[in-house]
Length: 283
Figure 1 (tube, rainbow, N blue to C red):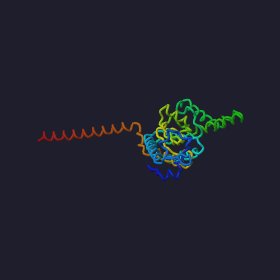
Figure 2 (figure 1 turned 180 degrees about the horizontal axis):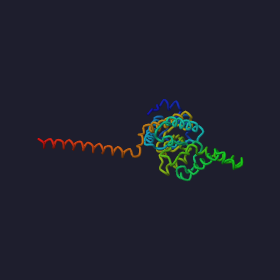
Figure 3 (figure 1 turned 60 degrees about the vertical axis):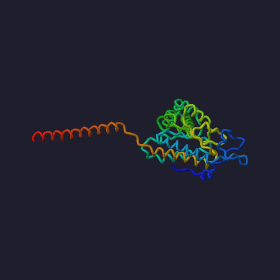
Figure 4 (figure 1 turned 180 degrees about the vertical axis):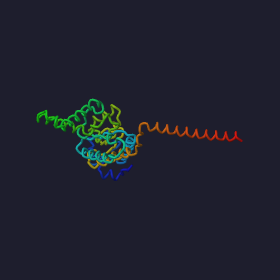
């Protein structure tokens, strides 16, 4: 797995924190110093956190775990969508069902995605039904133009919120969050249901709420791009390291083959023994 250097973190602006007056006292361990009333993050701590987070995400991919990337701030949206598209392109020929294990939310965190998934997932079905109705000319023929327009408006609203998670069948195995302070509802839900969290944690946030905190600037596009791409690369690498799933009945067939081979060997051995015995009797 590629290692991110301190120089790369510095060039991306990962070291800039918030103003001293906005800093969270619990994040002091990650602060190197303050310059012109701006907290400077210790990049050695950033690298340590990033390496630990990447190792966890790679292991998650290796065991076929699902990952939900959450980043609703303006600076993070395009980066997340680009990186998800890149990962799916890299895995499009993968034999495992890995493409459907990477999800994202970039518009707004919908309360209950983790704590009340059964209820939230009803909107996935609603969105699918609307798309089918709008794609069917016969279905639209029985309704007025205004009614069809209302369907499309509702579809657009649902698509904006759920397009990144519509394929999700159950709560994800882990969350990767950009700005844990802003996405505090997602963090609370993950803690309530025991979902592991990886997050970019700036100096205004509480790092102890996150399982794998990455102390870094969560406002700069360069910082977000560097960290998000590294974490996504780790997950893709883990997925590619997965052992292919065993085909149903394959193990039984192998066992049966071994038994057959053993029986044949035993029969040959018995035949040879019988031949030797008969030879001795003749003599």
